[in-house]
Image (tube, rainbow, N blue to C red):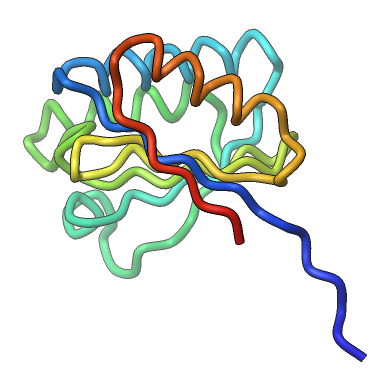
Length: 136
């Protein structure tokens, strides 16, 4: 007997302006603080993971403030930056996954019945962003 797997929805939002990814990352941090999402599972991916981690790329649990500082430090050291490198974040409280992608877009995934994700897709569309959606 197969175990039931949750249905997942993923949106990919691509802005017309590169700096929009930075403002969306800041918005994500503000929302995390406001909602009390103090456990973020974070992985610095391609390519700043090569510089941020001493050895293996290992997911870390951190608060929004700790994440903000780690990103600022990495950017100041020239190790990478938001929208030029992958930053993977899982919000423990909601089960949502966010990727601030090196391809200058944002991926958000979670349960197929998560209204927040569809609301975000609409918000991005209203800003003129291109939206791609998939269900798994």
